Image 1 (cartoon, helix red, strand yellow):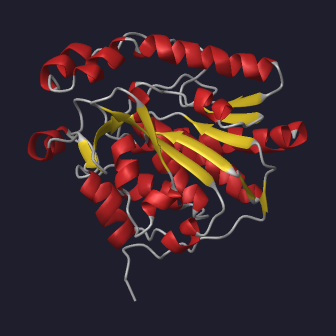
Image 2 (cartoon, one colour; image 1 turned 60 degrees about the horizontal axis):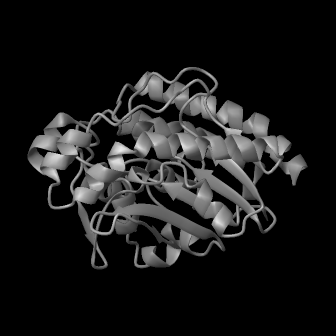
Length: 299
């Protein structure tokens, strides 16, 4: 039997699935996404699972421990591994061409340190979608649990590959980067797929306003083979604002619930300040607990 650095947390099946047409829509945000992990802890406490989960970047990655039903796993990762330079560092960028070491995050941690329950994940009846940006076509492409069979995290790694900070991922004949490049809040995809109620988990507080991406010029130079990356980054702040306004409109119409940090978020997407990240995670847990009964009543 495989021995892990920390005692394995077995996955648990949810007590109940929410009704069809109920979607969980997840923004990314790098290590800011640990707020979402706290929210997922509240969902696991309540024993509920969404039939449809749409995630971008860290949102897509962090949802996996929720779908595998492993309570406390994400907090263990913060406490024990995010502070390791192998997780995120400029050293990684220099020597591995990636600020985030995906071999460590998606390989060593789940394989050797903190057990990831693939069996529980893959038996869930969830329409799961992780979004990635196709560098050649400029479109957002979507991958499902089916693409993860064989214990393969590659589709999710592609969704997390931030331009300039991470390399292009070759997957199934496509050149892929972070899905947030062109679709930072995947609410439009959720609507197009026919969902009638959306629980939207954001990683920015309500006062946040999106601004032009500072890496656009650098991406244009470093990724000159893929001009559509810089083109998408140049208008990303406009897309984010449009999608955020749509989320607010749906909430006003009673068709959505937005869950987000209540306090200003000071951590960056590459932050490894453990106390700050644990505080953000635990805020997500508190906010999530307060929202569970609210959106259950809406349904």
